[in-house]
Length: 171
Image (tube, rainbow, N blue to C red; front, side, top):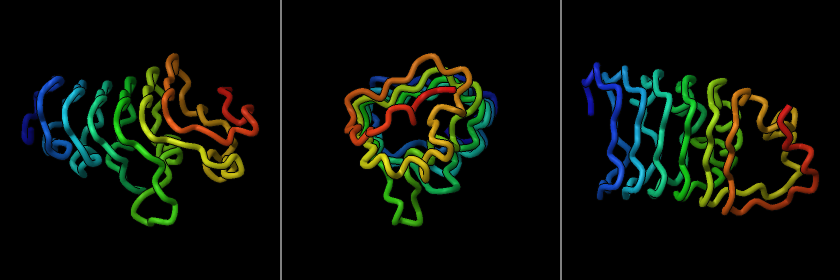
């Protein structure tokens, strides 16, 4: 889907697409992407950095395993209002791997002010130890960057170690 400068909506759900995530070089007007219910694996390619107009990204029911490092191309999607990565294989990235960042840090940096729907259910995300909260969440408030959020689903993951649930409130 390279070089489609006028393409605004791309609906590819419920197919048998089994490659890595698509590249979108020169496809800058794209606002809605739905690639749910496929066999897609991997993470976001570098060309996604140009997708600054995307408002809805649905990639549920695939085999997406994680996100990139400090220069993750999805961080540029500041207009994103809907993010659905449910039913994938997302895990917390190892902080010992310099190529990747911890998923929670990615989410804190990634969340734009327009996001109102976040579904990360049915993955393998975990909070292993509440002692990491100050390092991972900064102020300890995970949802500070979500002023419009109305729906968060993180059910059916491996969340544990919430000794102090007050660290997860929304201001």
